[in-house]
Length: 142
Image (cartoon, rainbow, N blue to C red):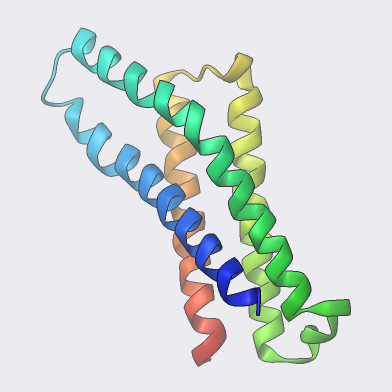
């Protein structure tokens, strides 16, 4: 009974998180070619202030709901006897990689990243999240 609500919460948080990272990689990166440095620094400062307030809650809820769904779907790791279970485990591994990159980025120099490392980190996270989305769909069709 709770599983559909967990799934909805998990998907909502995943959409916000993935969308936020995609926005930073695709949109903000392109704005650097349009606006001068001072304007871009102001835009990025405002975007990052909002992200720092909202994203920890989104990411925390995303992972908490993911753990809850995993315990329902894969109680006692008996799901590893199926193809679904192995794809789920691969998805969990990618999710842990995203979390590792996210935590390392926050801890790096007090949470302040130089622009090059910021872009590289977000691109890595975006690729990992694309892998998670692929595996999430593949679990039900492969």
